Image (cartoon, rainbow over the protein chains, first blue to last red):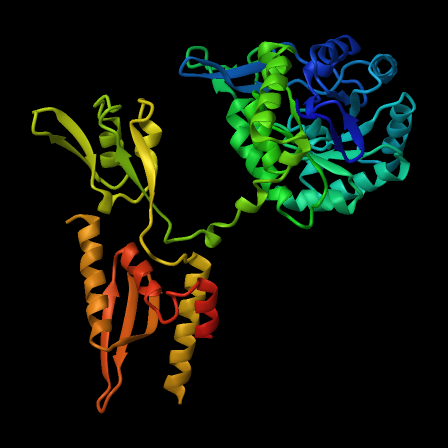
Length: 429
Length: 80
């Protein structure tokens, strides 16, 4: 059995599975039950001046029978006094000394406010701090959360203030509601961040009720934008983790967050650079015990791969993540239809005809049976047919060796530039 | 006409010029594709121009530049 222990910027945890700062980490009762179920760490629901929430605060997007493909919330940070939370954190840490308990914090962007909360929280024995610069709703209207996180200089300054007072590792949680997350990540590091976590939720409106014309959710007929999370956001989160992981100006450990629901998701985030991960929506959907399957699955995967420690996964796919201009233009794949598995539904033909390059023919074979066949010379290898195909193993994308040397767009443009430069010089002479 | 047929036609025109001793001296790209100038030296210099429309031909023409059959890095260096 592989070693699942991780250490994120000095914060030790028996496994990489942490609960994200959210409703499941609202109380000591919940966090302690989560630890009993197997979670290795928890980021306590954000502490700050206690707020007042609205009633009716969650909504979900269901897609084609899949419940909670995406999840939307307008809930704010903790509504409980700091002292109540601190007492429960102390009790939780006392019961689970080997588990990671990290306090998520959010206060006004004032130095003395940060110093005060850092000191009070660290006094009860937390393992680390996570600065919430990501919450996009409610708190942002008051100049906190994402409103802070969208200003790189403010992220840097507030991180610096926290580091002035902190004795435990400081994780800066980043908002995805920004053009380039690496800019903010670099400023967090300049401010002294020991690690970064991402992503917080994405600005969203879950829907509009077409019968009542109310927003979903609505509060007495009025709505406001919320934060989107759940499986639908995973590709966005994974991309942002990867961008930060490959940015040499960042260079600190990453706690990956965003739509993680299975052990396979965990592996993907770690391969793309995360040292550990955090989960919220999947727990809200299925409960704490999903971690049992995640632990088993990850253990089996590591054993199958012959890896002794989960830490060996971190960053292994980062070198494979590049810029478009560095991709080989001469790499060629084509679709091949396996007639044994094809059910002749024609989905591939329709997709290719209507949305791609019209290279899948509907033919009739010698036995009079309808068959679908790819004209490989016209296939651009877009993958669309294999994506829409409902039959397992019916379409394979095959890499062809066309004999051409690898050539990227950037190399091509440099070659043309050099050629034209030589030509211009010769013309002058 | 299939995309491959269009490309194959342009590729043949490129290759025929190269077989006749022409070499590519200039490639200008704009909204209408790539304008490729071929030149053959001799007592009287000859010039031919191809307007390439297909993406595959615009890619192909750079793969036949001198040196590209080596690694791209070597090709870039050799053309400097």
